[in-house]
Image (cartoon, rainbow, N blue to C red; front, side, top):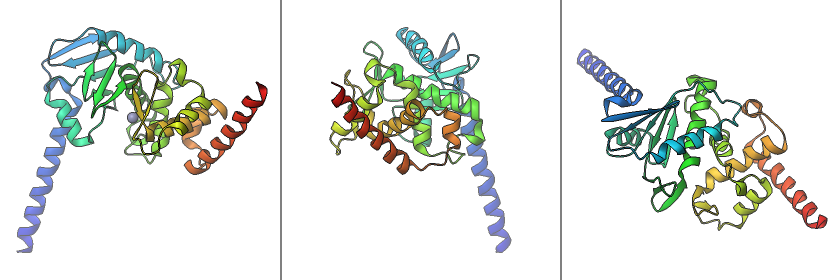
Amino acid sequence: MKRQIKKWAFRLTVTGLLIAGLLLVIVLNPFLTYANKTTHNNFTVYHNQQIDNLILGQLDQAQKIIKQSEFYNSNLQLDICLNDGSNYTKLVETIGGRAFARGFYDKVVLFGSTDYKNNFVELNGYKWNLTQLLAHEMTHCLQFDKLGLWKSKPLANIPKWKWEGYAEYVSRQSNDQKDLSKNIARLIETDKNNWEVKFSDSTISSREYYDYWTLVQYCMDIKQMSYEKLLTDTTSEQNIRQEMMKWYGENKNERTTSY
Ligand SMILES: [Zn+2]
């Protein structure tokens, strides 16, 4: 009996490993599940339907944004996987959960429905700026490229605020997104019950990611830390937030009195 159980346990483990291996092969090779691919500069775009050429300009724009990252690597080749009927996005969504997009290893995968003309991805009634979304996910690819698989999330134990906050920090480069004081003010003015924080173009960030972004922006713009330094810094999220709000309070007063 015991031998039988062992035999079945072994069979189940082998089957599990084979399925996991197969899924990994599919996820790493989008050409298996897409009908078409279009190459453009450093990008290979995988799509099932005719490609809207607007995305090529949006990819160039996103690349311009991520050039500001200290992790930028001009040789990095990225796969961009569109959500236009391939089972690929369904598979990645099943493994990783529902999101606007995902960036891992050398892949950027879009979910939701994309409006290229108006430059946004819509999911559950919320709109995320498409160019900035691409830049956000590409930043994750830069993190993987620089730190390596084992030192990247989810394998490495990097606090979520440093991982996601940095992708937001790099990608949010519109004129009304650069000033930390104004960014904190926008967060404070947003109803605490709202899931999202809205920008002037009526696209959003989730409140959680927005909060992470301000923390990273405080560490990098005000404390002048590099991202590599921030990753090794041991100050807790709570302490950084306290410090940042103290800075915000002082800075706010200074601004008022200087008028
Ligand atoms: Zn992210």
